[in-house]
Image 1: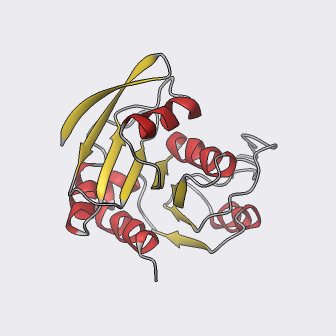
Image 2 (image 1 turned 135 degrees about the horizontal axis):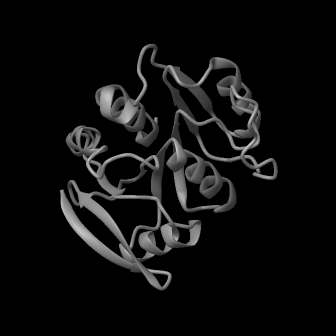
Image 3 (image 1 turned 60 degrees about the horizontal axis):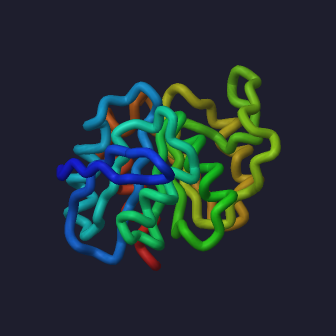
Length: 188
């Protein structure tokens, strides 16, 4: 993947941009502790589906404004949003608070921030609902009950995909995640 440093909101953000020059792009937000190459296998599969990928190398210290500035700098006005773990939490809030910028949301192992997780933690009770097609991909670390409850905060098509026995979905189930992303990018 091509490494690019993007000046955004007064700072710099490292992103990996790759894939065909397509009008369809996917923004990938990693979990806080993920390595920079966590989405490489997913991206390779997405490129075969004629999708351009933009993967942030880290979300540490990256605000919603910085993510939007990165998209502006790369001249990407309409993208499919994917996030894993802490990146999924950012993706939920970005999708909920930014109208007209995202075509779909694929959240990995993180329910909507207003839903209590298995430990009873509510991350953001004031987070509004999303109004775009949403897929929640869960592995062994998130139970089905909070995942299903997240559907109350998705005012469009909502799906839960359960991958039993998988902890780190981007690393250990790249093909399954790429398939769910590609399904959301299709207009049918």
